[in-house]
Length: 259
Image (cartoon, rainbow, N blue to C red):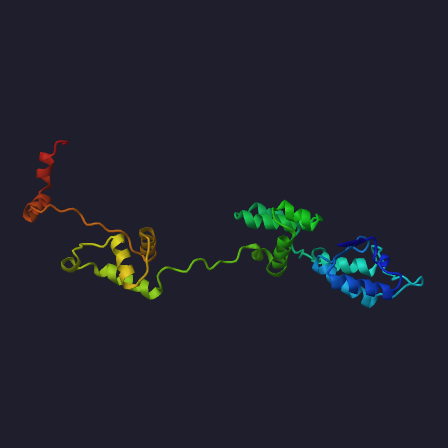
């Protein structure tokens, strides 16, 4: 890299300057100019270094008269290319105090930080300081300012994400519901009721998809199905004795040890 105080140190005339620039570009040497704030290692510096010879002419002393004062066109060009954030205005339909009140009542901490960062920027704080106070960088704050200008406070919320695609398609879920409601065939399968493990095996066999038992339970809940368990029944029960017992509650009170 070649470092110089100003670009007029590279040549005493425009022809010398163009020759030096062409030679540096051919050999692939980067250039840093302190006075004009040009660094050809950056895209902005490369662009400015290429357009300077096209717009500048030598001064009365035969040197390339490139102004370096803060108010010159050169400084303005750099500010417009490197400092676009400062030129971005923020809508003012809400005052910084009103924004802070909204942020105080916001339940989402991320949205509250974005609102506070915009309020700080409206108060006159630099964009970099406002971004750092909310735990973000300057470019991120710029993106939220753009959305705030377009959509107001609603634009500061996160956009919905698609997320992971469902394991089963709609027609496969409908088939699963039909299988569960129809129940198993005890003679063919030896099952009296389906468990989640049974449904996992059925999905793998019919749909070719492997599911975890927990995922199957979640899918069943989404389909409005719940776990059902049959009531225990004694094999030697007497339905007639049960009916007689229900019709004579007085007999149960006489035989109850707590009465």
